[in-house]
Image: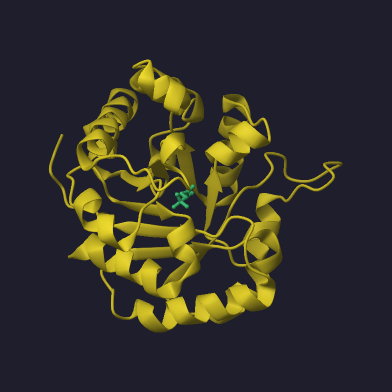
Length: 256
Ligand code: 13P
């Protein structure tokens, strides 16, 4: 594996927070402060209802728009679902897929995640693909096994060329929204494992280029330690992305 420098990518997952007005105001603050951190990719992922208002603020800027989920079919009788084309029309560049809240609360399977990734890549959206183990799985030393199954299933049938622009995110479930963050060593070791899985499937060229974000209670005060690890290329941020100041502080830690 080469030590090629990867451009950090920081994404804010706003989850089920913010009205369109609140989202637009938050995007505006992020945008105003984003000039302080030019050397990384920055993405904000509002709820579906806020995409339009946030897109209006971000047009022509270097902050990208992402959605939090989408359906795997292009259209049809799927009440409540949102298609890739709808997201692209609203100006989305990225889409978070396979978030653990989608998997555990909404029953999304590895197969659903794989189908969504194919649909995103076919239509031109860049997926941020999430994997991660539960507390029980970590305590029973099954982290690598769980993540291996998730990664292999997620990337099944994906071509080497399609991996360009795809981002992976390691989010241990026990660290999400709990304030209990993985240690830099714990996180880096899983990132390293994920990179080796990518290498086994796609070769060293892809594995050395792919960006792997860490997510789970990332805050300004723990970001630097995590983000200075060799295999951690950015952060997927929940709670701390709801304030522009803390989101930007984490972005600064990624390039410092
Ligand atoms: P928190 O940063 O709130 O722990 O959430 C992480 C997450 O789930 C991002 O997708």
